[in-house]
Structure formats: structure tokens, C-alpha cells
Length: 338
Ligand code: ADP
Ligand code: TRP
Image (cartoon, rainbow, N blue to C red; front, side, top):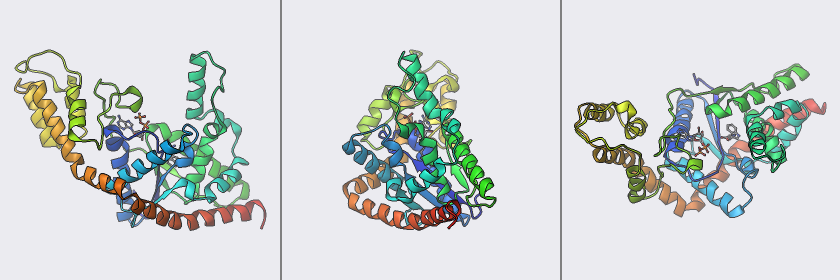
């Protein structure tokens, strides 16, 4: 699938990542990047800090979130000597490319973009004017994202379902430009959705999400993780009562971290009435801690040696910039007839 392909992943530095983010987005992105590299392709991995400023205006928070996300990717095994790892805001060519794309982007594309529509719907539900609190950054979000993608001749963009439309918009904009100049100036990107990545439920049974406050923390100490796991919703049935594992929330969360043998052991134990809720919560805790123990050490190392990370991001930008610059030149030459 990835033979000689350029794969690009972007992540917004918003919110402290939780176990659901890690298992559902961060870990799969690192794995896909490694697969692309192993297949002779390229992997670009960047932190979308320009996208973050639409919603967050506090520089201290922006700096801390960026730091956390950079350290989490490194802790999760991203290898910056193999993947091109950089900050969006270090590549001045991206806003320049965005400006050119605007001239070819139908306004209707922005009107129908999910992020904007969701913000309008929220305003309507609250009885506020449609565009209340909506800035131009949010409105034109998909054009900046298109520049992120098109700048590097990206073939494949791994995304969650919510980002599919944005990649389609990037592809459509590239198609419009190529058709106008009657040559393949821009590579048409495709999205890829990993069907094996499941949505991890939170401790109340809804999707684990920072906005629901139902998360299992990622790199906090064992005590904090234990506290979250022991507050997972259960009922009052006694341990000896046989239970259908698929109705048990702890088991659903366990699916995201357990090996097939571990999962079978918990499933059988529940069916046979041999495991109580306290026991299965301890099994989940062990599996979670086992998954993150080493990564947490690496995370803490990078958080306290952030100058090293800063250096890696600068090296990454130095690798990314010439590629974006070449795309910008190609565009300017075509657009201005140079
Ligand atoms: P949150 O819902 O906590 O605000 P975001 O919307 O910021 O999380 O999601 C960031 C990334 O993490 C997205 O790619 C999203 O698909 C993924 N993600 C978020 N929550 C989960 C979850 N519970 N299970 C799997 N993946 C998730
Ligand atoms: N919009 C993405 C998100 O909210 C982040 C992002 C910005 C991105 N630019 C991108 C993702 C380019 C992939 C490619 O998660």
C-alpha cells in the first residue's frame, strides 16, 4: 500500500492526550509512518500549531500543549532521523501556498466544511447569531490544511473519520489548479482510514474524550491511572454470576490494550463467573501500565530535556522547508507566468 508513497500526518496540539488519543490516533500514526518508511516511502509528521491558534489564544498554553504532543510522539517511538518531524509554524511557505490556494478555492467548500458547520450549529442551538465567535482561521481551516498536504506532494493522509472531508477538499483544490494549468502541478492526495483502530470508550461508557471528562490519563503516575480505572462504571452483580463480556465496560476498554490471550482470559473468566469487577479492573490497570511504562519514562526525559526536542523540530523544519519551497516555486511560476 505504501510503496514509495509520501505519507503525511498532522496533529493539533490541543488538550493533554489521553489513552484514547494515544491508542486511537498517536500510536497508529507512528506505526503507519514506520510502514511507509519500510516500503521505501517518506513520512512527514507535523504539529499543526497554526490550526491551534483559531481556538487557543494563550501563548503559555499553546507552548505547553505543543511541548507535550512533541514529547508524546517521540516517546511513542517516532524516529526523527527517519520521519520528517516539524512544526507547521516553522514553514513560512505554508501560509504563502495557502494564499495562492484561496484564489482557486470556491467559497462554498468552506461553507460546507464540518468544523465550520458544527460551530454554526452550536451557535444556532444556543440561540446566538450563526457566526458568533467564529474567526476566519476556523472558517478557512480546510485551505490551510490543503496547503499542509499539497506542499509535500503527499500521496496518503492517514486520518480519523472527522478529517476525511478535509482531505477531499485538498484533493479537489489540487484538481482545480491542475485542470486550470492543464498539468500535474500538485499531487492529488488520498486519505486512508485504519479500520482496525477502534474508538476507545471512556470510564462512563461514552467515547473517551477530554470534553466528557471521562478519560484514562496517559503519562500520569500509576496512582492517577488506577483512580480512573477503578471509577469505571460497573453494576452490583456478584463475581460468581456469569456475565456476557460484551456488556462489561472494563472488557471493552481492555480490548484496546490486551493481547488476544489476555482478552480471552478475561472473557472466559467473566462468562464462567470466575472474575469479579475488582479483579478485571486490576487486569486492565496492569495492561495499561505495561503498555505505557517505558514510554512514560521517555516522555518524562524529553519533557525535562526539551532543548533536545527543540533541536529535533528545527532539524525537521530544515528538511521540510526545501520541499515546500519547491512546491511554492512551481505554483508561483505557473500562476504568475514566470
Ligand atoms: P477528544 O475527543 O478527547 O477531544 P480529539 O477530538 O482531540 O479528542 O481527538 C484527537 C485524535 O484522537 C483524533 O484523531 C481522534 O480520532 C482520536 N481519538 C479521540 N478520542 C478517541 C477515542 N476515545 N478512541 C480512539 N481514538 C480517539
Ligand atoms: N485538522 C487536523 C485535525 O484536527 C490536523 C491537521 C492539520 C492535519 N493539517 C493537517 C491532518 C494535514 C492531516 C494533514 O486533527
